[in-house]
Image (tube, rainbow, N blue to C red):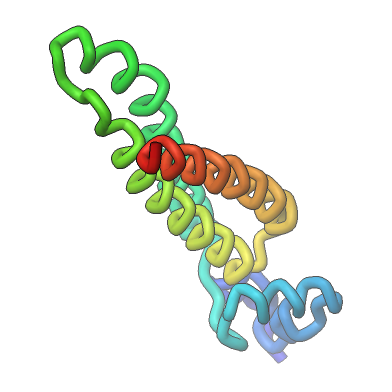
Length: 139
């Protein structure tokens, strides 16, 4: 049996994949996220997905709370387009966060539970804001 590390997981070759010896909660999350058995990604891929999802969320906040309410009205643009833009960017941010959560789990990252909780809270805020934007459009 070899003791060299596999490049994708960092685990020694011949060692069981971390998902096979995972807790029931880990196995539940892997099923919930529809992760295929045995496929892994690297921690670098997980970090990249995290950075992209955070960038989407940051852009949404900047647009919704700085650009749309203050900058664009100064030049006479953006009357009533805020909710539509907020919905589109919010949906993109939610998809990106789920994608990055899946990457963290696929990489078997040590902070996967931390990021899952963080991402879920952010998605909760984005769902609230999306509902608020839809209500603004309906009124």
